[in-house]
Image (cartoon, rainbow, N blue to C red; front, side):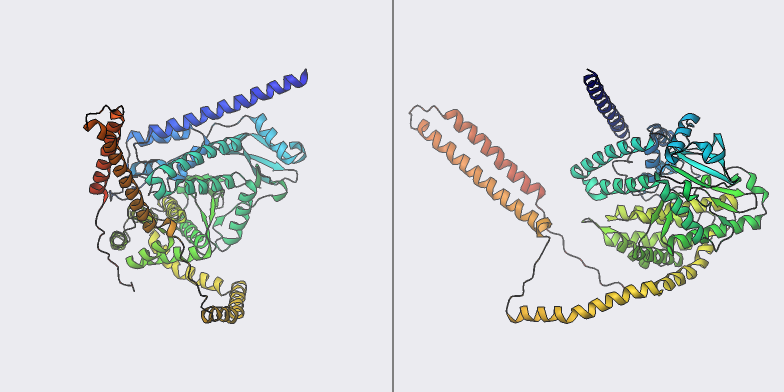
Length: 574
């Protein structure tokens, strides 16, 4: 009897879960449909050449309402809004400005739930680990909240605890978003151009990585080592024995947030020194070590009691491969120097050229953009980050899909520029970036000439030398025996196969039309001789169907068949 009761409860629980999942899916779909005409999810007006607005520009109530509705959907969509704020190729300018203000503050979780979460993660009572644990949270966000504590040896620490149940909620929401993105990609031209599925996949990896606090602990330790040359910057160290997937224990940093006015107590020279160290450190981290911290906004920075700048949240870090890192550095250097053609070449090499890619237009638009940027160097609203985002937007306008790392680079630079405007409004950010470029290039060259890198190159060269005689001998043998074959791939997806298929379909449709007309004529032949014919109605139907098909073929040929445009090719660029 008890087994039947348990089975019935299990079935009811499964049904309740399915009902909740369907309700959640319906709520998400209603939200997407409500804002389908804004361009945020259906593609912006790429004909507009308006620049990316600054964070101080005003916006109307509709983008603000969009952000409010986005935040009401929960932590997954708060993070989605933060990710959308790095995509000027998808989001119209007013909504981009509103999304830049996306907040992740949330109502604190009750102390009993937090205590249970920590004890389950550490597998022991709090009293066996901490001498004191503050029940009141130091800060509460959409995914986690932070508490002060003190270890048994007296060491003050900050404990970051994941909100109970948030991981399961995020996984369910991501599954819904992946399903919607896959449908859009297969049914719309915008989806085929933007590839929403790939974007959601990258978002999923970043968000699931942010939910694993062991990865954030590794980021803290790695950033501490990489930024050791900048003593003005402080990264809290993790306490590895007490760090788990859902609980992160790290050094407690006592300081004041930048969104207040307490930082103004520091002298101007000290604040400018902090900004310079922050800029140089992050440039090294991005272009030398290949790691982009996508969220260095003022809320994640503190001014410590000893006058240093502390970075307290490193959950969202993107790793950049060496070759892509080198191209991004070349792009930055070309942009600072005002070399539009070189910068455009690097963006094209980084991106994916779609079938509709207009190279002439992209070179012209990006060249004019970088020329304006170089001409206005030194002005107050001069922005490296906005330049990167504008290059992304122009790429989407011209049929070039840029990598997400370029947008993340632009958003990170915008955050850093915002911090500098807050601490030292008169600091020349572009001069600091330009002066630091030679050091980054030297560091990259030094890393490429390091012993491990040279060893890898030597192994590849050794393999090439060893395999070259054998491959050359095999090619000569095939040529001598007249067995050399050339295989051409990709014809199945080419425009040639598409046109051949259209020709075959039209020929088949024409044969069917002719057969229907002939059949109707044969059926009506008896009626024309005065003999009774029971199939006159069938002949009439066949004739009408043939007429409709024939008219369809003629209309299709008149409307869709066009002459090929004259082929134009650019000469090789220097």
